Image (tube, one colour):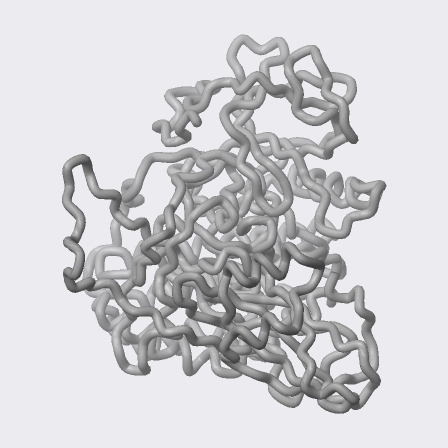
Length: 574
């Protein structure tokens, strides 16, 4: 595969990187309008290519083209007129606002599947997005796996401030235009640091008007989603939801790892970690910095700071270390890469080595845990090119992708973001490996797991999202199970797979769905089990749902008792 790690463009219209792959895409009346380049990158909502537009122009224009995929459970008539209208509305709104810190969406069209020039391929029509091409790394790449230090904490808090500017611009400008809108999927993989424009939000797939509760599977990321939204992803949303995500982004920029999903214990989990990093970085008042960050993560949306931009400005001030904040943006500490604007989310594009989640591995008052590298995992120098529109949250941090850095895990890992990844060095030619029997310095992983939502004793309707954190040993994965404590089979577990079960590196922060088909007032126990990955794959291949015996083969990590309440339907979690 042609590498996407080319240097920045040399001038207007000069598109470095992969060569043409022989495929074209375009609307029905111009099916060869866009020449696709290199291998496409698949994310949660579609596959994105670097592309060039020729037309009658002398020099090609660099763009990003994304072919949308039908979501899980989509009807045969997908994309429906409503789906296309949502994208057209979003395109017109973003073109009208033309905000410098939001990726620019050019057009939406329906055309034939990618095909050789002059030969339209058979197959159902495909909806495409065309977005601007952006150069830069994502915050996931710049900060993932590495806590802020004295030389970086000021710059990272500047990035958070720039993300706040992006949200404030979107909220204020769309409200003034009569269409108050929210981004709804702010996370490190959706923030590209452009050399001229600073932080640009690239994944516009989740942008909706505030009153629009539309949220198909995979359209929110638990670690960056406010608790009131986790409880009901279909409710109309407010600015406070975006500001919560900004607070979670600040945690990532400080710790170099995703925060756990929202829950009552979140302050206790995060406060010592933030203070430890701040002390190590030489921040003047670590306690004040931690308190300020956690104020934006309060469970009550009314108690969060209402002005996110003002909050971010104070965050910058509190990050003072006595060192001068760098005036120039840091050079790429990994490899040069381009990012086009589209929607592969960073998470789904690769990665594989997990960094130990500091809120799980370290005791209060200690410093952030050292990264734990999974010896068998690899990190692919993925997408350096893509536009942003998906909102799949998922794991992995790979080089920028055209405006759309891949932000989703493999298809099954929707909504879940794994911790930053650390690449295991590859021995160079002639290098020796440790002799048999040599003492290993690798950390031993103890399997742990926790259910964060729903809360103990809370009411659940016909279905509910279940979220939590976990740390798994090699060869293990998670399954969820539920049993009805009031029926005639109280010991029978009904098992479900959490999102991303087949990619255990994505399960440090996990999410799944459980169904409660009984009567109002019945009591249920939800169980979280660690099972063998091979056993889970075998059970999955044998049917739509793992057998109850699968839970019996594993270790129960956590349980949570809930009670069924009126309302909802089994399709609410689809």
